[in-house]
Amino acid sequence: MSISVPLNTTLQLSPSSSLSLFFPISSSTAVSVCGIRRRCLRIVTSCVSSAQSSVKNNGAATDSVSVVGRDLIRLGLPSKGRMAEDSLNLLKDCQLSVKQVNPRQYVAQIPQLPNTEVWFQRPKDIVRKLLSGDLDLGIVGLDIVNEFGQGDEDLIIVHDALNFGDCHLSLAIPNYGIFENINSLKALAEMPQWTEERPLRVATGFTYLGPKFMKENGIKHVAFSTADGALEAAPAMGIADAILDLVSSGTTLKENNLKEIEGGVVLESQAALVASRRALTERKGALETVHEILERFEAHLKADGQFTVVANMRGTSAEEVAALVQTQPSLTGLQGPTISPVYCKRDGKVLIEYYAIVICVPKKALYKSVQQLRAVGGSGVLVSPLTYIFDEDTPRWSQLLRNLGL
Ligand code: AMP
Image (cartoon, rainbow, N blue to C red; front, side, top):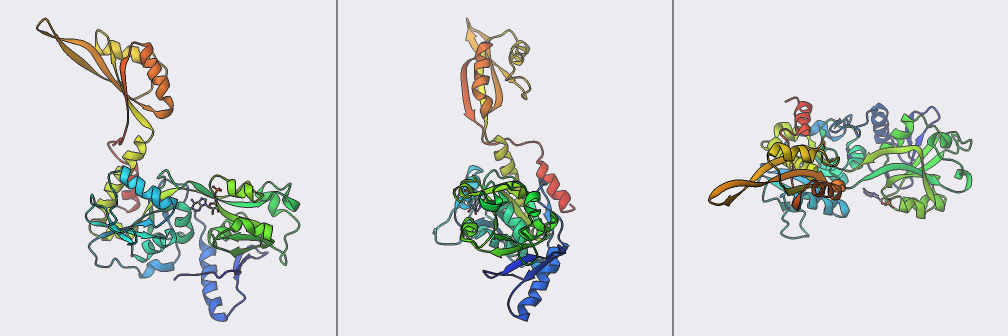
């Protein structure tokens, strides 16, 4: 069932703190409103904190989902904006470039994954289509997964930290007028202004997570209104007292004289790889495909910001060179070093002339590491970025198999 909440609709938390939705419209609408109410009241789990979790959605679309007979696995990607660009870049960096014959087409291919097709969709539609069985995998922000997934158990977060699309969903209030000295959710809730007749008015596009957050925090007398954009203008226009929206740099809030408050963060979000449980368990090839994508993502993200440093060092044995390297604070505690003899031919004899050492260092320790290598006699230092670090096992893969009961 898809639910659209019209503009100016008020979602109100009643004084008893039970969640109810007030629509000034017909009785047929009231039926679906009750449906929403029941669902909201029953959902208490949060799925944003664990590395991989399934989310619960009491009812919604999944009951009728069947894995229809198609051969190709479908991956949903955001169709525009920064998330779209970053998703394509991540795939490209993992040698899974997306080939789109025509930029106006919504379907594309990944030549490295011939059994998979890409569908460009709005983020909320990616989640909806994962639930309806029209997509099998998707890349989308955790904020959208939580808002539109509404805890549905069919949604599995395969990788929760793809390192882009960072933001948080937060409550913000004006930094002037009656809010000037209000700096926490508790203080906001305790303001005498909010009554049943005159609740705290919050403008948000997150009509599931917003009321859920308020209820979980025991905040009474709240009324929500929805809008698709420019929420930051709502308090200055007198339409709302507060907003609940995504914050990235915080600039938009600042420029609209709004501030975040202690305890007001609803969730931390970034891009995630999400899958349909049914697809992974029932669609041929889906599990193998997600394994390949996950392994590439994990290996690439682990290597991100890491460098391989190779240097030559003189010494009488590999052990002596290793001991010398280990005296340096920036070089100790690293895995390795790997040390290999470098041979030369002199007077017809093959001799070890020096040793080549290889270490892996994070970007922020790079220069210090190079200096310390030089300090113990390292020369000819070569630095190259790492593309992948494949571990023996991918922890998220083991977790996924456990989650699927496999
Ligand atoms: P900023 O000024 O960087 O804090 O960005 C805030 C504005 O960008 C708000 O209007 C948000 O709705 C929007 N925004 C921030 N992060 C995201 C995101 N990850 N996805 C979609 N919209 C976002």
